[in-house]
Length: 117
Image 1 (tube, rainbow, N blue to C red):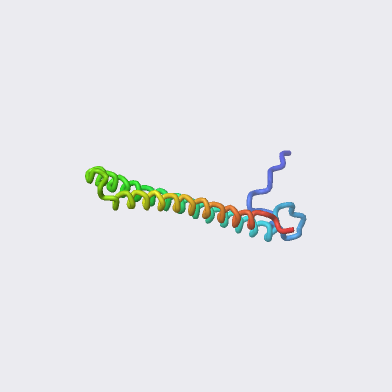
Image 2: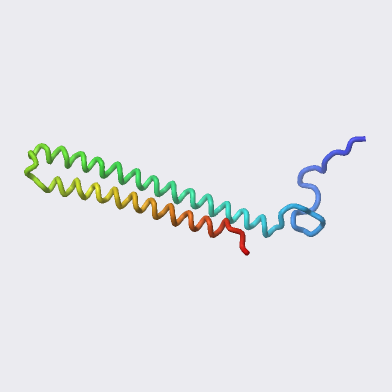
């Protein structure tokens, strides 16, 4: 009376040529590879974010200590000014590196996610 759907896992395997409309083995493999590249790309960007956060924490601490010491010296010891400038430079370089890493990850992901022509 009622027809029940075929149990999961039954029937022919995708891409075996027996009338299956599912993805072929090549399509499945390609999709898995793209997914893996996407996950790796996300991890790379997360790691770059961690790097930026860690550098910022260290440099702002160094800048704070140098500022305190510079104020205590009443601005006489210019060494502290150089430490502050260097800390700011390091943070700017880290931010630029974060952008570079993000752009490179985007390019890699696009190379794998674009279907071959």
